[in-house]
Length: 199
Length: 245
Image (cartoon, rainbow over all chains, first blue to last red; front, side):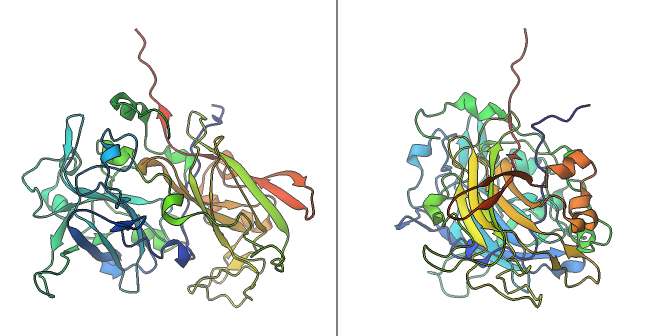
């Protein structure tokens, strides 16, 4: 069979030397063009671990999510004109020696489009040495709209695997006014492996 | 992406199929130990694609701007980086061949001595103070990106006693959707080290490997002559085939 001229290009690993300047400032999604994002600001943080629960140093984590009202800054969203002008929706973080990444973002709202309501969630992808392609998963929030059905969460049949897609709120250490912290570890391989999607 | 507001039907207009494995690198690569400790052991799960996965960050230059198009020249009048001058260009399209305009392209590479400006790089090679080594450009209306640089050097993988990475340039491209966020490395034609590179040779077919290698183009002649390397990219996504009645 002759090769089509339009076959998808091969993905390749990000390698060890992704520029630090490409990460600086991308961990904070709560301001955009001088405006402050609406809604509940949160910290989404955790560790990226490989087999044996060993930390992955220097992994790149990227996220994409709707704003606090569930609107995506993208023309395919019919509500895009109402997207929060203080929220862009995309972020990038790099893991440290403990495998830790961290984002400051907003609690995403329920997005409801064309009869496909989505429970509040964050799309997340991992790039690292050893991974020739990205790993993609979705983060949900344990106590946020937990009664809501979600087609992506329900595509994961195993209840224990579904539980590994929930970010869990941490006890507040800095008083009631502090920004809530949600913990979400990503295990790329091992007993407690995070569910990843066909990509 | 400006002008008329897309209606709901356009959401389902572009289809994103899983990557055809034969077009891609193997996930597990002998002598590349981390591929065995980091790839998931369980099967990847199929999920429906909703608005969330079909959208993605657009107009990233609003968020962090673009850089100078020459990675090897800090500013006019400044000394140029050492190495062989190159111009790198190509077209970014989807699987139907439609250009992806206004796509952010991030580029990074080693200097002519095979050294990155990065704290993780422990290779004992000199840093070139006149070499920037990273940049961001945006595709034009025809999906064309272009930047200038110097040809990167080869460098040893420090954990290995035999593996030298052939000269290559890293690309990170933002298509219009979360589904076509794309990362790769592109190699130079005719390099002896290409024959033994674990990553390049993790693509099974010669035709697939060719899509990871630049093609040479005519030199750009001017105040400085650049040898031109070309690489087109096909990102995932094609228009749904209309049903026949």
